[in-house]
Length: 70
Image (tube, rainbow, N blue to C red; front, side):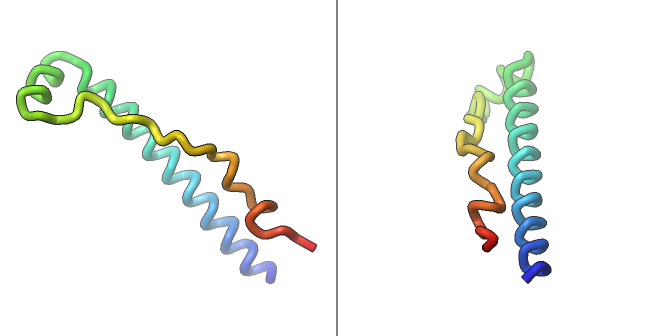
């Protein structure tokens, strides 16, 4: 049971890390895309001007809620 809990905790931590990395990538893209000449070239090639950030609550990935102990 403990090994299963540890595996689940690792999976949740990997998901949180991936979400953080995704947010950083979106921020970097939006910053890069808004600068000159990227804004001009990107607009001419129909690249998105920006991407929206993921809006889910990271706090919902809570081990105690996923696997209540008891």
